[in-house]
Length: 124
Image (cartoon, rainbow, N blue to C red; front, side, top):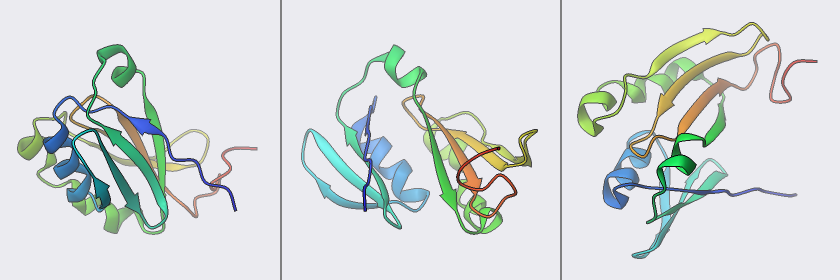
């Protein structure tokens, strides 16, 4: 088994950790420079480091089994964390159902339903 665990930036390290915990990630390690966050085996390393260009160009996909149930976690996120209002899930032209949200540093997340017609592998 292979796993990729990217490094993501944070503009406010504590606020970003709280944001990811609010959407269901578990902090499995943290010190003053990095936090390891996991969601059912999918994870990343959150850095106490910020560069606007990097954050603004960073996009990631998270596949979940029940997008509607998962999406309820986004209620109130914009007000609580000062982020843009999440974009509710919709079926995209390539057949995948996707909701979008931006973290406090500007990282864009595509939250996708695992069993959509395009599946985890995307369109064919």
